[in-house]
Amino acid sequence: MNKVSLGAGIVNYPMPVSLIGTSKDGKVNFMTAAWISMVSHTPPRIAICLGNHKTRETIHETGVFSVCFPSRRDIVDVDYCGLVSSAKTDKSGVFPTFTGETGAPMAENCALCVECRLDHTDVNGGNETLIGSIVGIYADEAVLTGGKVDLAKLDPLFLSQLDTKYYSLGETCGKAWGIGLDRK
Image (tube, rainbow, N blue to C red; front, top):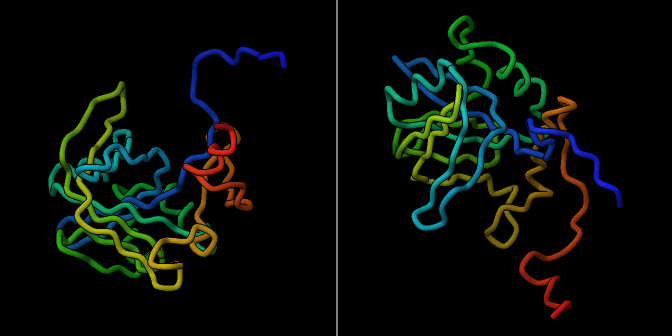
């Protein structure tokens, strides 16, 4: 196959869509973000990459945040939370919330939520990568199979950056850390 150089820029790979939850002065805010990743197994840590947003400022002030994974059914509210800034719009009523140990708000509608304490920050150009230590993971029983999150039941959203479209999962195509054993 011939490869075509696309130059430097943003890579168009699927990114999980999340809601970053913060609270300041009793006001809850959710910001839609897709630049997230697990960065450590032990200790468990997750990274979120944010530009200059009120959410980022609040995380620095409070030291806590949540990462909530919405499903396809919440696509309109999720997109709305990414379109409007909490600096200008009160988004506290968009999702019902619950809290865990840190007090960071989590979206009740999201079947999978991760509660975090800010561990450290890396500056990357105009963005910051905020590394959060995972304090707790909360999942609805309805999305569990054998005590583990079942992605088909979760029905998460993914963002394709370059065509600015949301996608959902397709079918399972193989067992990780297993299907390659046939090659040995």
